[in-house]
Image (cartoon, rainbow over all chains, first blue to last red; front, side, top):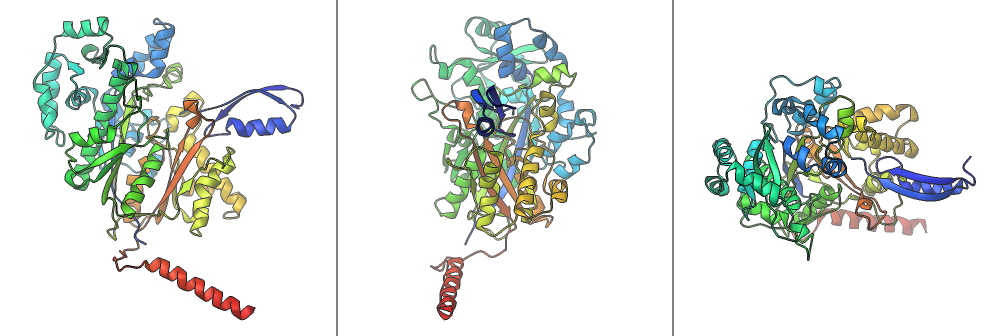
Length: 41
Length: 513
């Protein structure tokens, strides 16, 4: 589903942080063009 | 081993509607983009009265008049279910209105930066003179002089970049800049730092009053808020701790500031525990004042959804860590959790580092902890803003880890959450919700025999400082005191037990060989 796609990641400190999502989508063949983790509290 | 103990905890809130409107970062940004924005026009209609803030159930839980378990029984939305007849005075502290707080800011201001209008100053002086714990602060005499006229204050705001202070719709004062060019001493920074200092003074005075701790007995103060005090050459030079202790008469104390975003208090508690257990100091106070920038942080969403602007509270806390008295709950310094630099960022890695690694060290299961206190943000504030129920997310992660480890069955995941969790009741003041609001309740529950132990968890978003992508987290376990206080006999009984056990294991092994 993600193979060859460009992905922008917005992670959540109290949910799934950016680097963890990054690892998953890279493994699925996507290209990470932006990744960040934000704190919403 | 003589563990240090939690001798007391105090909590304070300050309702700060004026600072929400004028110094909250969301409103500052909005004003910079468009001074006539719809949000800025609508926001004043969503501000609460002081009475509404006092009767708001989570605020009553924060100052200890109801327990988190009692809060859980109150139906949502809590702002539509106030506690009738609730008091501003609490078991652990108090809720202060903004006019008195402006007076307190002037009292703690060592450089005459806080300016109040004459009649307003006279009125707050009268109130503070009858305040049970603030009336004896010697700096109350600052309210006798240097009042200004309304015109002078208007001129300071309009022409000299002073930060305005409003009360009941009137300009009643301002905070001046402390340097002509230095941005670290600008009026914005000075207002934030003075509000932080004043709220920390309020909560330290509460701690001293509620626990009977003599200020002269305090050896060390660790301040752990998220503000920075300094000048252009050393922006975070410090030292809030000594500045706060000075006002409260802690003449024998020294102190320092510890920072790690919202995890700061958890680090500070570990440091305090270590200082006491090592014998360096006998009485250490960990404290943090409130953050003006975070006031009304999610107010755009609250306004859009027709809710009150619930982020109108400055939060503050103080905890006294002392030597083992055989009574108060101990801090298990042999089971401190920490998110290491190499721990990884996945939720599982984070929770393993903070929660299960320390439990494994002392042979406990996840279910051996009666209550977990991770981030305790009030969900009524965060959910409308799309940030979810933060404590619930953390409880679910801990419970999922318990399933994975075989501590509980998958079917019991939510049952475990219900058993060791609690509703969030802290204002979204960064370091304030991070585990520490439960320390007072946990201490009482342990002393009353309702629970055996609780884990306090602080989590910090280090990536917000743009120096690292790392996350942070620290935990500590509060546990019922065994009642045994080790005497200084020159050897450690616990260590001796371990040595004998090891020798016997070796002996048994030699038989097998």
